[in-house]
Every structure is written in C-alpha cells, then in structure tokens.
Length: 367
Image 1: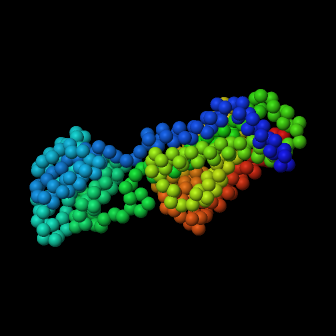
Image 2 (image 1 turned 135 degrees about the horizontal axis):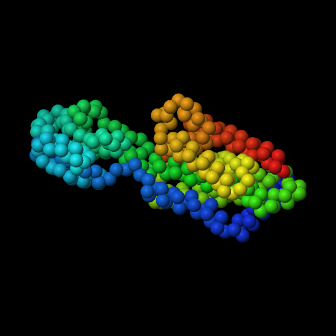
Image 3 (image 1 turned 90 degrees about the vertical axis):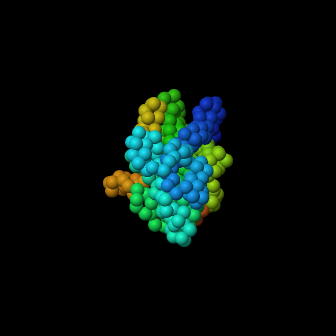
C-alpha cells in the first residue's frame, strides 16, 4: 500500500514538474495575495481631518493639541475658539472630528481636578468613528491621567487598556484572517481540479486498471499539494512578520500542527468536489464558491460571529476557517497553548476526517 501510494505521489509531483506554471501558481498565489490584501486592506484611519477649538489657550491645552497632531493620525483642518463653526464644518464634511478644550481646562488641572475635554465625532460612518474614538482615548490617556474624555457631552469614565494589540493596528487583526482565507481557497481549488484533470485527459481509466485503491489514490493526490500549501503558508507567515510586524508569541510547533490540519481539510474538500465535477471549469467554480464566500463572510474574519443572526451563528460551526482563526490568533497574538483552544483543534480534526472520509467513499465509487 505504501509503495503504491508513494508511486501515486511521485506521479503527481512529476506532473507538477512538467507543468511548472501550476506549481508556481499554487506556491506563489498565497504570497502574492497576502501582499496585495495585506497592503490594500486596512481598518486603520489616517489623515483624519481634525478641528481644534481651544478656548483655554494655556500651556496644558497646547500640550494636548500637540499630542493629537504628533500622533500621526490627525491633520489640522480647522482651528479657533468659537465652537459654533463646527456645525457647518461637519455638515460639509470638512472635518471628521473636533477637539474642544474648554476655558476652564488649565484651571481644573492647576486645582488638581479632572480636566474634561470634548471630543466630537462624525458618526455617519460608524466604523471610522469607532476607530477615531479609540485613537482619541489613547492620545488623551497618554497625555495626562487626570484628563477625562467626553464624547458628545457624555463623559467616558476610565482609561481603556487594550491587550495583544495596544495600538489597534489592523494588520494584526487582518493578516491571520487573510492567511486562513488564502490557504483555504488555494487548497480547495488545487485539489478540486486534480482528479477532474485525470477525467478530462482520459487517464482516469488507466488509474482504474492499476492496483490502486481509493485511499491510496486520495493520499497520493493530496500529499504533493499539502507540501506546496505548507511551503506557501510558511512563506506567508515570514512575510507577515517581516513586512507587517505580525508577531509569533506562541509555539511554532503547534502553529504548524494547526495549519497542516486546516490545509488538509481544505485539500479533502477540494478532492470531494473533484469527484462530483466533470470539468476543470466546474471544479474551479465550485471550489471558489464553496471556499471563498464562507471563509470571507462566516468565519469571523471580517464580521463578528456574535453580531450575526442566531441561524447564521449555527451555520458558522460548519466553516473550518472559524476554528482555524480562533486557534491562529490565540497562538500568534496571545501566545496561548492548546489548553485554551483545544476545542478548535478537535473541530479541525473532525472536519478533516469527515471530508477525507467522504472523498474516499466517493473515490471508491468512481474507481
């Protein structure tokens, strides 16, 4: 059995050698997509148009103003002492945020009383406003522990403490999700077309005449793509660290285990699709739709699962990227061991065994 399986794997490697474009595509596409999406996608907000209404004019007020402008997030769009100009500025979109420093600011600080600032935001874009608010809190908190921020005249009590991503850098949130998305799509498409290619070229009849059983054919077809996908994952992680500063705080060994399990499940799903499809075009479309949309929309990559309707939350339990993302972020960003994310590890094992088992059963029928 081992000899026949190895022979099948060698055959697939030789095919990839004769078709270097396919191998380079499978190896290079994850890295290229990571570079494109890693630089293009960002939840960070830069060059925020800020109005500063300084009614105090004291030294402490100037310090707060400089702290905002030195942060790199804000650019000064308006300055003055009359807050009535803000209505028109916000209405025309000239400013996205306004810092109002009241006349009593320096007096309150000198009297050892908490000084209150007003931070006004344009809430028409809720996602951007939330990010800007986080920046404002962080800057004010670093400027003075005595200052309280008031947003739209409502005091915010306490200073936020953000773990694992204190600067709220979006690459630390996006890159693990991108890695899951890219690996799933490439793994499924690669194997979805593997068996279909044999059907189109008529070589499936030759394989039926060999002593190969379904499991041997499945493993032999999968191993080369697993090796290529693992290499692409390693390259993507190195690029994520070198270019985007994504750390690895946990165990590299456990990260490898989780990644191999996830990729194996994706390869198994692609192999299952290939047993149903009759052409590479159908296999490609089925693989793309069944891997891209669920991973993008239902894994928690972009949209929080807790915010979805209950019915969709149940459906997300069928998406392997959900478990991979939870484990990946726990390892990379939090440095946690499997004692925390073991349910996700079990879910990946169950998913891999299930889809590989179904693919084997379908392969038995085809052979």
